Image (cartoon, helix red, strand yellow):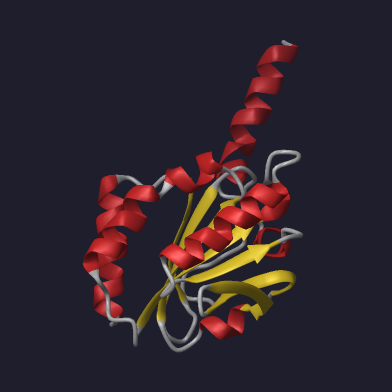
Length: 183
């Protein structure tokens, strides 16, 4: 009997667990500021960090990829990132923002995560890369650990799409269509 009660409780709570974030369609993301590390800037091949806040994302259509500082999390939505790169959206009106939660990295790998983030900025200089040392964004937005969240927002910062975990092929197409419609 205890097992049935426990199973019932787990099943009742599973929708809450599956959608733990606090982001709502048609609303702006909650204001958040990353002070420790922050946005990775690139100047003459050298990287540096500057404070970042979500207000800096206004004015362009964005796909925000908020990921744990783990290779497995980055791979969850690699097909979407490849499709975005192939789509060659205009830089003056579109930008991808990747927010890496360094606090959600495997123990002892923080410096590796930082180095890989800096290398990614060098490889994709047109993208906005944010290294969040303390997991401030994930905490503020209620994002799952060890995962990847994809958020599409319009130029005014309104959320048009949000999903945690891997996107299906049809969801990748939906994201690309949403971005095209907003440009």
